[in-house]
Image (cartoon, rainbow, N blue to C red; front, side, top):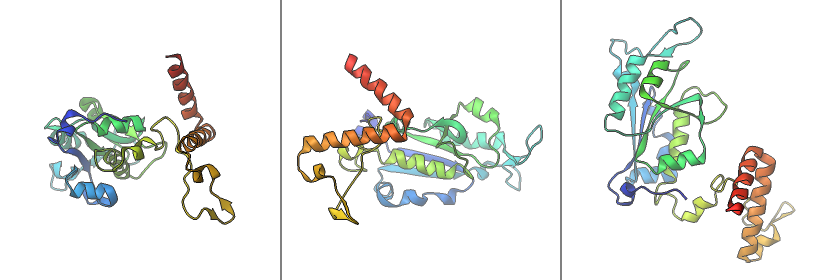
Length: 249
């Protein structure tokens, strides 16, 4: 389980997602629904979506320009984006994250780290990308959802925020719900079943109907290990190494 900061424990600060985007109307979007939406309405967390275009200085509110060296597409201007970042980070809110396909892949450990902090500033890229000098001068943390290319950083920002918000105290309810999810133990999640006990000729595994909690836990662990080994060899290798270290200790 992640650690909750003392600031959050005392209720003296609200976890804040501050989004810099060319399309602020895309927010809250899905974040305004279900558990995240209820938590937003209840003041458990705060969402601030700012239009990057409002920091442009010319009458046309230009935020992009042609790339030096030629090539297709446009690049987000450093002066405009830097001004937006200056305003967004002025109170010390960290980390400042740039959502880009070339960034570090987001994983559950990273999400836990962010959720335990005060919040985040998320810069949503568009066009061909962002002038490299902004990334360097601001020390932006570049992150990616995976080896895919989206039209912009907004869908990725929504996914990252949702992953963090559901870990905030009180949002999901029972702590056990979080502890048994995929990636929490370095494994994919085990299969789930509900009523009816038989459907289209397929029966629920007998052990789940037994009421024997220890046997059920053992079955779920075996199933989680089997799924991870077959579907995510990379996770399985890391899990085996971690298990070996625990045995040695």
